[in-house]
Length: 393
Image (cartoon, rainbow, N blue to C red; front, top):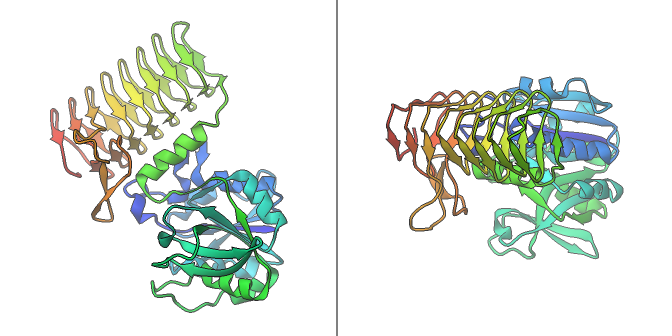
C-alpha cells in the first residue's frame, strides 16, 4: 500500500501562520500537523510515502527526508494548485497498485487508518452537525451508495473526512473535469470508484480539519491531552510540575515555576523564574518564557520570547516572535459572545468564548502593549511601547 499525502497547499485561511511555511508543517504537540497522519499510516502498514508538495516544499522535504520511520519517501511536485484530483495526478507516475490518499491538514483517529486499509476500497467518514459544508456520503450496510458535494439539503449527516483507499484502476481516473469551483476534485474520482466497486464507509471516532488558526489551537488541545508525564530537562527543585507535563531534554525550568499539564516544553526552551504555564500549552524549541509570565492554553512557536510580566492566553504565536515586557493579551469579550477573527478578509466567529490573538513569525511588540481579543499581527508586524491594539496589524 502506498500513501499519497497532500501537502502542497498554501493555507491562506490560516495566515499569517503559513506566511513562510506550508500549513501541514505547523506544530501540533511534538511534531508537524501532517506527521500525525503519516505516523498513523506507517503503523497501519504503508510501504511507501508519496508527498505531493508545492508551496514552501522544502519544509516538508527537510522534515521527512528520503526515509521516514523506516518507510521510503518520494515526492511529487504540484506546479499549479488546481484541486485534490490534480494533486494526486501529480503523483500518478509513481503509483503502482492500490493507494491511499490523505489530506495533509487533517487529523484522523489513528485506529481508523488501519481500518481504512483493511476495508479497501474505502473512504473515511465522520458524523457532523452541519453536513452542508462537506461532501456528504450516503451508505447502505456500510457500503457507499452516493456522494454529494456541499448539498443545501444533505441526505445524511455522514461527511467525507478526506481519507481514501483507492483501487489500482483509479490511477487512470484522475483526469476529471473542473468542478463549479474551478478545481479538479478527488470526490469525482471517489464517485467513479463508488459506481464500479463496493466502497466501504469507515467511520472515524474523531477527526479535525485544521484550516483556521483556532483549529490549530484545538488540534494541540487534542494531541497534548494524550501526553504522558516525561521530564528529562533541567528542572529547579522549587518548580512545581503538575499532571501530564513533558519537559524535553535540553529544556530548562527555573525556580518558582508552576506548570499544570497537559503541557509540552520542547528542547532548548526555558521557563521562568516564577512563571505559570497551564492548560494545553505547547512551548516550541528554544522558546523563552520570562520571569512572572503566565501562558495559558496557547501555542508558542520555536524561538519565540515572551518577556517578563506578560500574559498570553488562548493564543497562537508563530516562530521568533518577541513580546516585550508587560505585553498582555485579552482573550474574552465582555459581552460573552464568541471571539471573531479575520479569515481571508472577513471577520469570522471562532466559536470560542475565549480566544486571544494570532501572531505571525518575527512579529514584535513594544513593552506594555495590550492586544485585544481576536487581533491578528502579521509576520514582521510591530507595535509601539504602551500601545493598545484593537485592530489587525
